[in-house]
Length: 338
Image (cartoon, rainbow, N blue to C red; front, side):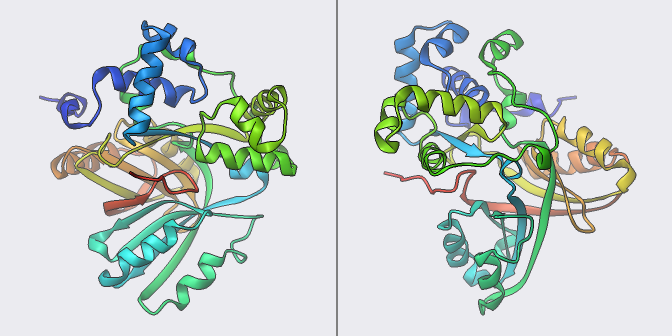
């Protein structure tokens, strides 16, 4: 019998094996130098730089410098919006233009939108998007679920599970780990220079120190030092955004699972290890475990539900929501497409 991974066809994913290796390397360390990447991949510096330039220019990949909201005392939320099908496109685009949103998806045949929303502080009452959405005529219902703990996916993607690099290559590229600890005990205060630097990295995570120094008024040594400090503190991490034609599986869905609270950590760790899962987190609400699923087709999704999901510890109820289109990815800013 074919396994799930045996049925993956890489030929229509939009990247060659060599490009996939580069993407995998950047997912591990988005600020790795071309020499570090070249040494790990067994190619020349020039080859690594040329491949990156081609992929970036074509809009296939971009590296983003993003921040962990809980390290800064902010709160991430998953927001679900039920609306009339004729309004999904316009409402979704309006949500995507906001810098406090990411991962804006159209789901359930165009009758639902979902997105991640970031709020300052612990509450959601100050979020402008949550104030405006319920007053929009075509919006039927809005629900917000606070993200409590990420099991997989903040700075990782399915390429970390399925990518072509060996364990030795991954180890060579892996940067020093961020500090561990509870988010409430690890909050970091930013000054205006930090905020400007982070805003630039959110647009281009591989911007050169000279470019960042010129834009912020800081010295190059200060830029390098501050990036290193913010990464070590767990504030700053780097993610890769892929063009919709790249790494796009034919069937995507979100799972909303009700798990016995005494088994939530166990179930979260178990689902995080599934190759089908690109994101998994504990959230508030009756359905307390949320996950994003990428598979090749509906038949494999059925197999995944009836085998892997059904075996999760403490599972009480399951709700599935098919994703039809992603309007915005992981960053606060929409990419500029040619």
